[in-house]
Amino acid sequence: MSGFDDREKGFEAKFKLDQDTQFKVTARRNKLFGLWVAAKLGLAGDAADAYAADMVAADFKTAGDSDVLEKAQGDLAAKGVTVSEADLRKELDHCAATAREQVVTQGR
Image (cartoon, rainbow, N blue to C red; front, side):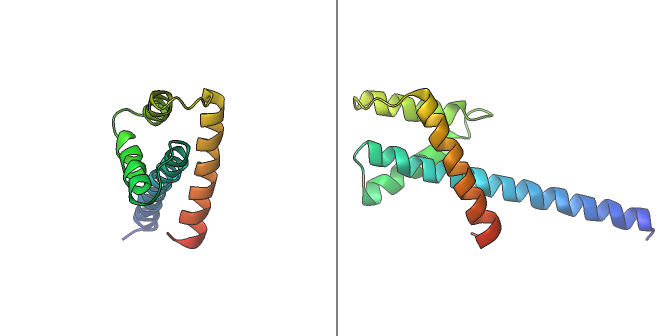
C-alpha cells in the first residue's frame, strides 16, 4: 500500500469519526434541550425523559434546527408558557456547548 493510500484511509477514518461525534453531540444537545423545555412545561422524572426523547426524534424531520425549535415553541405555547425565539436559540446553543463537552471530553 502506498503512502497516498494510507493517507486516504486515514482521512476517511477521521471523517467517519467526526461525523459520528457530530451525530452524538446533536442528539445529546437535543436531549438536554428537551429536558430544559420539559422543566418549563412542568414535567419531571419519566415524563421529562420521554419528552426529551421526543425532542431527539423531532430533529429527524428536517435538516437544521428549525424542527426542534418549532416543537419547543409549539409545546410551550400550548401550555401558555412564553419563551422568546431568541431565548430558545440561546438555550439550544448552551445545550450544544454542554453536549460537545460531554461527548468529546468525557466520552459520553
